[in-house]
Length: 201
Image 1 (cartoon, rainbow, N blue to C red):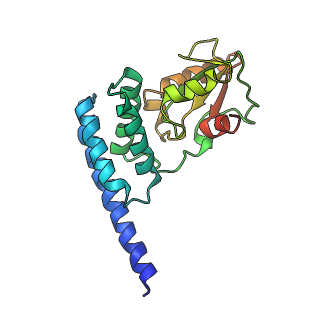
Image 2 (image 1 turned 45 degrees about the vertical axis):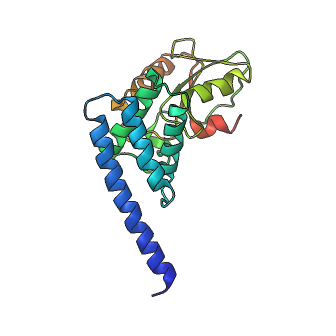
């Protein structure tokens, strides 16, 4: 057996232990249905200790997201909901662990539409690789568009890359269900994946 084999086995064992620990941590933090700043700081410390030895994209992404949330020292309502959704996904073991959800399980437009920004209304839902929702919305504003809550005037709903198999039961799933219903009724709303949206920035 060569060193590469032992290194890979060691890495796999670390990754497996990290996932088990993170699932336990997520369960504990999300158990009461709310999360406070002290708990987010605790999560940040755990991620900081584990990110350097991790091959798991989700740990790096979550660490970056937690750092962004704590940047302004305020845990706002959007950040609270997004983080709670993510932790619940972990504790239910239905998170794709760094893999993007297979697009066939989401009601995305097929074929995906060409996207423009000036004067158009966007809404974001889920957890994004791009960054916090406010950064996604700023990217739209920088290109002359508008972003906000889901209404019948929304033209594009963008779903974050880290969605879960149980998206219908998550808090952001309500927006997807509503947008799908409106689209089925003939309203001109497009539903696209984060990766598709990013390709037009």
